[in-house]
Length: 296
Image (cartoon, rainbow, N blue to C red):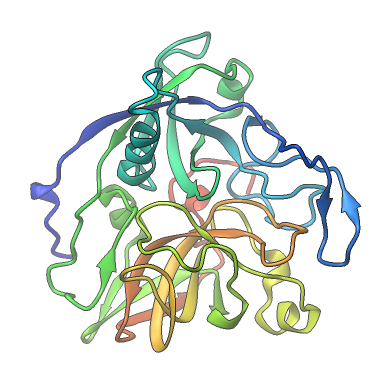
């Protein structure tokens, strides 16, 4: 068992409602090849795309698996701050409970966060998806912010529920920590999301436009919910390129057609001094780790 400060963490309620899909004034998305396309995107209840499914190959752009929630605080003075709290305090692996509507009482699991649109993503079982409606409220029992690995001061943990950490089961390897991942990715292909000054919400994207790089790193079989390692990436205080650093995150939305975009990654671990050892394991996906599905 890894020594942590779990007994010092605060569990607190945050709430969001099922978000409607949205389009901007520009209905077309312009692909990196210059083609105008109309595609499903963020928000809504996605009935046939869940964690465990491929992140690529869909006729889609930034589609979020399962259920997308956001806080729509009615008082305009606090609306942005309330949604920021939902996004920062929610952690991957948190329990989410539907608190109104036909699906009231159904439980799900937070699987990631999507920056820009500022959504928290929740996986529910298929029978629950059929009962949900946009506007239904979902309570998240937020737990994990402030989590520390007491024996590994050079590794920061963020956006992670302690029970997900325990289920993932990273192993000590000297003064380093061996973490299961499905893929190891070079920082040179990371795109949208760079420039943020923190990684306690949001994500950043794996660009998949170079066919040779995709094949070299085996990225065509990326799945939503996969844990991936990003080499030469330090996420301690935002996302920067740093040789020797390494970060691990979870894939949170599908591939994209827009330049600079691709499957998004929410940060879970980072070490500016390279104290994380990625161990490739095809089952390092939240759907397998938490047994959210029986068909994969």
